[in-house]
Amino acid sequence: MSTCTYSFNPCLPTGSSSMISMCQTGCATCSALNGCLSCKPRLFFHLEHDGIQQRGTCVSSCPRGHYGVRSPHINTCTRCKSDCASCFSENFCTHCHPGHFLFRGRCYATCPKGLMPNPALRECTGRTTALLTLHCEVGEWSDWGPCLQKQGLRAYRKGQETRTRQVLQNPSVHGNTCPHLSEFRKCKNTQKHNKNKHNYSETPEKTTKLSKNTLKKITQKLHKNNKYTK
Image (cartoon, rainbow, N blue to C red; front, side):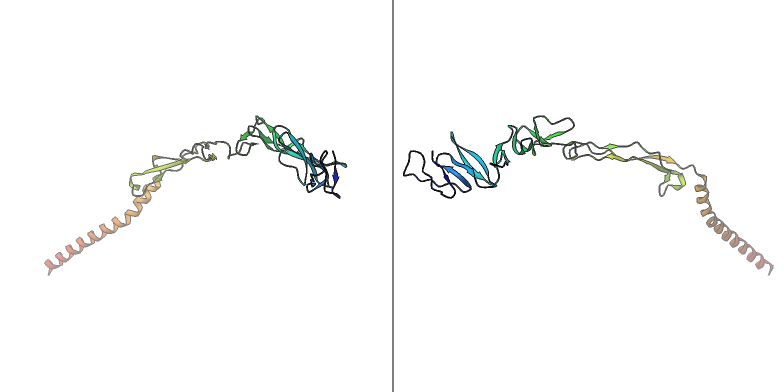
């Protein structure tokens, strides 16, 4: 097998004097049959499959499913582990094949305890509201509030009192919605000062009306008496 360097690109394959092959871009040495045999500085040597044959190429970055390994003599592309679709190094995957989920640089068929598989991302993800179905949670009822009278029912001392509770956990999109957060019930206002206050407001009006009627009768009676006197 004959080889050539990038200073002399034409290569004559073994057994052929007429076929001329040019080294691919980036090759330092090459052969017509096997492609690149070595690469220019800083490039990675990568073997590509061509049917049942393999041909050497020189690339600036390794293709998907491989990672680059640099050494003083040659930089090569090495295949990732079988469960990695792509990787940064031998022990650090960046993407996983279908059926596996990425977590901290490794691909798992089953996510570690406490994590959930995300089929869309092919990752093991923490228990977040985006991945879990969370139902609404509420706290205990508060004490009943004061009895407040409804407008127009003050004379009957009827009212309404309220109690409430707080939301402890908001539901996720598919979680159960929160129940009612307030309750009402009828009550009777037993505070006597409300009734007295109401009566006091009416007392001046009634007293004024009685005084006018009495004064009118007295005036009429006096007028009648004066008439007979004359």
